[in-house]
Image (cartoon, rainbow, N blue to C red; front, side, top):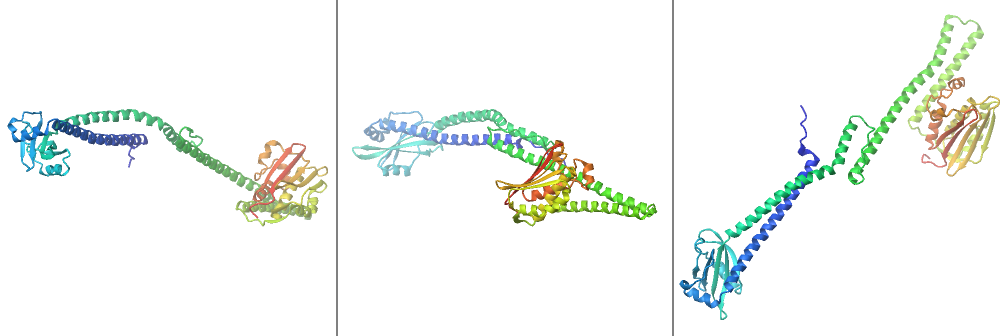
Length: 476
């Protein structure tokens, strides 16, 4: 089933415009309602006050005499019906508008006027023709005595017509304001949401796989700026994850390839010697012994490689080191005879400036020292070689350095020295049985101690491996 297209009214731009116009409409309706109530009340109040003024402008004696002789009543106001109500409730019409008909009889209101201390009063009522009228009731007092009530009434239709015209005018103004709002708000909202539209377009490109794109930052719009900044940060992390994954896959590919190659070499040699012996090509005892020794050396090399690979695999699984507080200087001193045996005729010098109290795994640190010294042996002259092992304290760290006067390492190799199976000089490493895992193991052990290792070298002069390790770490 095909997906339905998203209509324009589902866009944020349209919804903001629609809601803004709804709020404006509600505001105009509220204003119109309040205006209608006040205009109507004002019109009725003004009309009633005008009628009350007419009644008050005539003397009380005149009203009493007019009630006694209605035929002699000469006052006439267009659209107004005048009547006089006596105390007994008898209603006498003094002047009647031909369109309005007979005035309404308001018995209850008459009594209210009398009970309210003769204050002027008006009300809305229907006349006998069913038309709504504004009725003004005003008591007539002569010589302190209530003589009756003058009732003037006029239809509200003309006033309603005036109010209606005002409301029609207001409605026209309101509709014009809404139309103006549409043409005003839409460009403003469009301009305001332009950064968001740009972000949506860029996210479409990013969704297509272009992870190197970044969203622009809008400092004058804090919310969109924060959104873009957070999204860019997420893209950085995703891109980094993909890059790390790609590098990890490439490293694994190289690792498998190199491991296969390193294992194939001794196995091929052993297989070759065995094949020759099975054919009977080797018959003399000294030849057999020589072949067996070669196979033994190749098997040792293969076994050493497998052990290194297993050790690295354990390190990758975050192994539990046996960490305890001790003296690194004591560890170095205990290894002196072993190291001198390793370097043979090379000059070996120790510079121990501190006891090196720290928290570390004793056996693992021994392996680190052996690996670094073995590496120095491979790159120094057997007779003129010089190797110096230094231990000192710097602030909260112990610094262990192994320096040699060997062939040095070219600068292009330095960033890759701690990669697995990497060898700056393959022939030299193979000569000493190395597979390019020693420095990788060393770095893994140092990292597990929350330390760091770096190398400085000048080709043809010297090489220094320097380890910085905290005296106290969280793994203790």
